[in-house]
Length: 259
Length: 259
Image 1: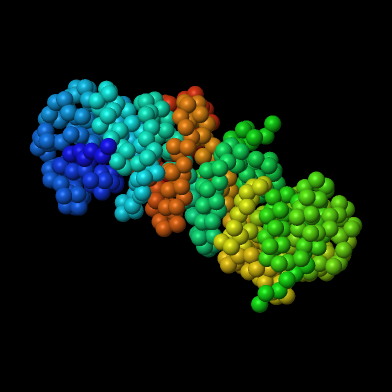
Image 2: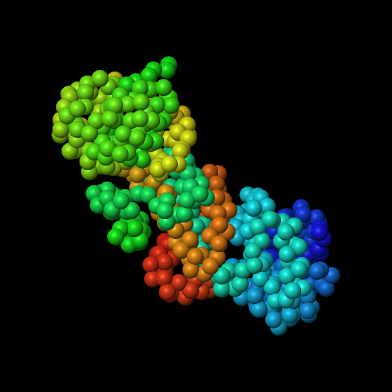
């Protein structure tokens, strides 16, 4: 069953842009785009053939779904000013409770795509897991139709699980990227081309598709190779932050692997 | 120019297995395999059509190159007992000085493939960076021919740079894998399928091929989103290790990005 919805988007940042384009390309009708940033919002409204509005009061009742793609801290403010009742209100946040909308509707939901979006780099939604939460069966039905119009990986995830997933995502995306950044900074300091590390980055990510990360652990810490570890720690003396990180992660890997 | 060498391999672990197979497939002749582990060594010798020996004294002078693929701490012991002089002796370690061989030869080198090898999972050498170090032009000539027979990415890297590369590799491979392992442990505790994280792991690794990691940083820390960070820290109270890690990496990302 292929049903097209009329969607109003709140926000014009990365999530709004990527989700908006995905909805548009899947044949849905983007109705209004509300944002306090007229530059990004007008641009997005143009691309998505939608109406740009910059006041919450101008949000009208014509949409089937209202999707909040704003900063977590901005949601409650917009909900307080939200001018219509009993519509399906949905947010896209990993760490906000679903019932933040309860003063305005009993049709609430969460539409949480487990992916990291950066400006200007398109992602293929087809494989992105979309985590749904819903206040009633009617909301679920609409959210499922909407989600399956973008991706084949749809999961029902409650608020507690979603918060854990968000934390797990911080580790595998944001913190992993920081590991890359540390390596980049080190190679720069010693005039080594950073590109040398790319095949290793790729192999490390590919490997855990087939082997559990706890079984895929390699390196001096898991081998308890004291000589190498102390040589690395000595070399990192001038980088206090990197040394601290090296010591703590090495210690934690040892705790889990060395009996 | 395609030249086939006669190679003796010291060691029968992951590096010996992967390098040995790659040399064999590139048409080189694997002469002897020395190892103190008869099980893995005999198996490898069989696959590579080589002679298995379990005593350093039995190493003969017939090979063009002797490649040490043993633990860092084992190299010096084998060198002390090494029965022949003035051969080309090479190791594959990230953190050992080249001149560990100087008591036996002036033809020394390092053949350091920047990749992580796990048992049973084949890797394509063609894209693996191979870092060479060499004591003289004659050694370089042989090492270059050997390296280019496996890969198109060959770099001349001195001992100090190699040590830094090794540390950088620990961050992008071993420590990154630990980030994945933390996420796996968290999802298990809350009965969430770990597979949900795989598209995000992949996207995070792919992204840094095109964008510098320092520019690709996303997440609550770089946004200085205090509410989310404190919610995550509260949720991690029962996991002391993960909380410690979350705090330190968040702090370091903030130091670099929040002005």
